[in-house]
Image (cartoon, rainbow, N blue to C red; front, side):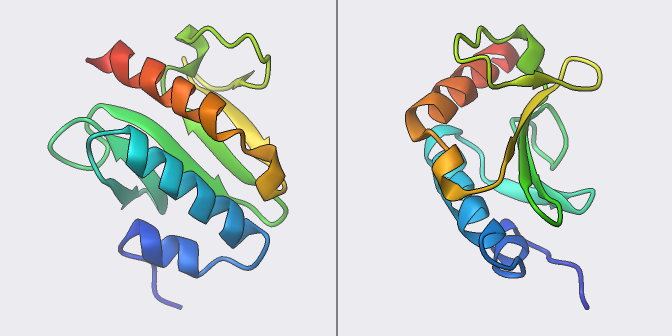
Length: 119
């Protein structure tokens, strides 16, 4: 199996319901952040720098039963929902098991805040 070269290829290679989760995330992130996503270290990443992984802001990564959506500086974001879980360094993430786990307005707010931290 070849490694996906684009976010769309990565998403298309997933089984349901992970594919639907990833498609929904991709739509939200692409609509909110100015730079397109790229596959970096094997999964989709959205960065503000001129190359994938340079000034990364957000990512998602599929696992067998869920998709993790994360923000590089997510621990610095105010999250009244309490859904973002602290991760390594300053990252924070949320595990998504169904498309219904995605709140488009909340996720777009997180993305704007994460973008502003890097801006």
